[in-house]
Length: 99
Image (cartoon, rainbow, N blue to C red; front, side):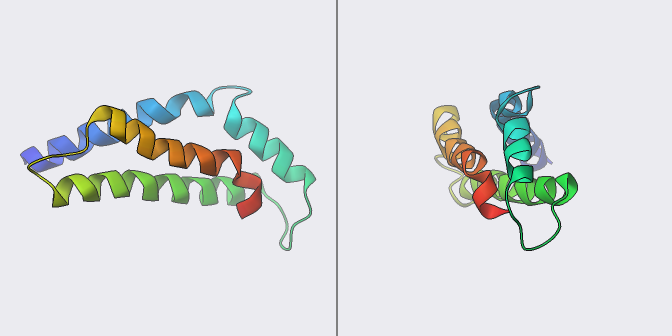
């Protein structure tokens, strides 16, 4: 039960780190707008783009959870989690490349 509580805490911490990117006129909104102007193999939809984005962000959070699960003696500290999620930020900045 305690492990579940810790996982939820880490997920909330990750959500707090990523939250500014989802504000109005922040990175996500700008990437969606820019991605719409690019040529795509498939029809572009915001839903498809957001699904891809959330998949990448979920994997970043899973990586943090997996690390902490495999290293119970020295879990990832907050500042390292922030650095790890900055890689997710890099994905946000290059979001249109993955569409």
